[in-house]
Image 1 (cartoon, rainbow, N blue to C red):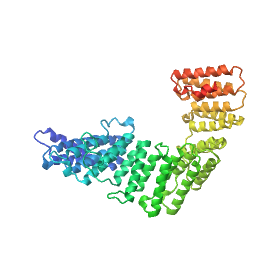
Image 2: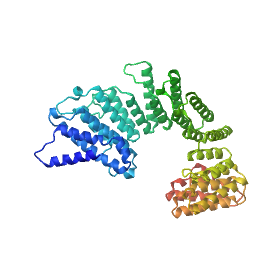
Image 3: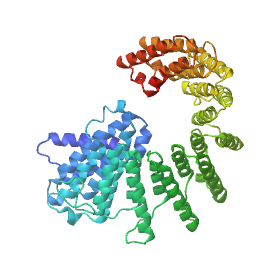
Image 4: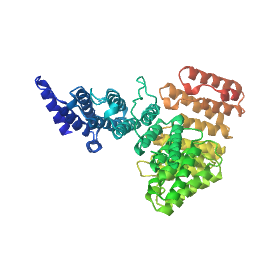
Length: 548
């Protein structure tokens, strides 16, 4: 960074003397110094956003010098290597900029680093590194491959969602020469190069961060093409490695595609068979892949075999770890957390039993559950008819924890209260009231994390609705009135929802209150008034009308 700053000062002084003209060699050297200043170790050493921000004007200056040198005499032209270093510098900064919070990006004005890479790539491929040379004659395949890889990597690191995925794929097609050349096509350069392992890795990464079903399927299709090409031993075929499989599996797991779980599981199975046949470390699966497949299974609704699938995957991972002894296959808190997360959306006694088995296994291996694990455990117990177990975990593990990362919040209480509400017994109502009182006490003592919200009060209303308490109807209406008043006074977190009104109406419907029909109709009108006043969550639906 000091060298880059000194070079910039020297250039500024030289340019003040009109008689002194910078030649291409000086421009190339200055640009090289600037681009080298973006080396990752410098950014990491600096360790602050301000230092990262300093890199941007340095690379911008290098870009100006490199483009300026293109128009100088042929003998002093800036070299292709300078263009490649410049593209590499912007690609490196693409990851830096995308990691900075949006509120801190004031110093990164202008186009995205990935877009700057595109512009330089166009100058290099369409116009050539100098005014006197045809790019097809002076850029060899290796240089073209480096340039494409940097450009694809820049979009992969940009975290721009589907845009990044589309841009990376377009560059990949141009690289393979599958895009018809046209001057009007931003990614048609008439310069091709053979993709390598890094190319595929960057394309898969860009498609993963798109977080879109369509892009995830494109990644899966491309990986299958890669597998088939390598299996056929096509000329120039690239061998898929574990990194490629892992990225595509992760893309599928978080895509929301309705077949994501099956597709991710199939890819993992393919890799396992391939690894067992070759025993090659380069294609050894890792725990993250199992974790992602379990996540995909957990996100699939109404899967009656969810518990069995999660159980089998954990067993396969354990067996593989016992077989290889590799640390990358050792089950860890992330894997167990994914399993518990998947089980938290499963129904039945087998789900509860497996949750307890996972807890025991973690204890036997001295693996401490994290907050996500505890939340999943509480949810699994509460939804499957064991609210007492859910409450025990909340009080004995989460609230009693001395770990600053394990902090109880309103969601944890809400889940347990809802669990007791499903119990539909006097004890369930009693425990729901007690939990709400506990939340109010803790909040009153300064714990902002457990502030009761709309879901908390609605959960209590549900407990009242399903109980046989003689005063349940009046108490439910009082709770709803409290929510309305708090919302009117500016507390949006307790805004009554459609579910809140519907639960109170249902409480009236099963009661013996003489004027229950009229009061239920009045609640429907209040809900509509709330909605018209701006509370979109209060919009009446068919369930509310049915209750009336």
